Length: 86
Image (tube, rainbow, N blue to C red; front, top):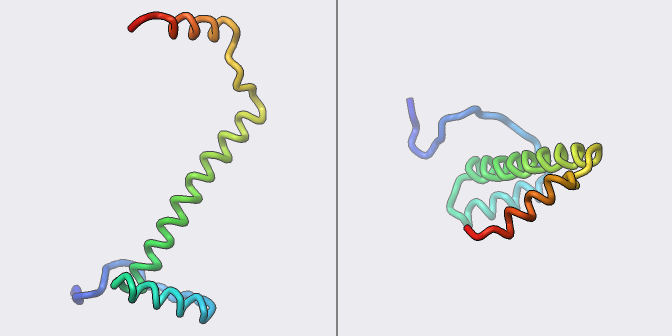
């Protein structure tokens, strides 16, 4: 059974400090969305941000171990290609 105004998903209980809850409640009311929608959006943003950080961290690890300088022959070939008219 679907109840209007409720989204389908996992229901969970979390404990957050009162001031944070009150600030989130005010923001949800200003945006005219439910607290659940606000919390879901916040988690989505945090997870996306963390995902980006993981990629950056992995690239940093690669370049910490390997140089990013092009081989001289590759650099010369690239420079020659850039001089050509397309």
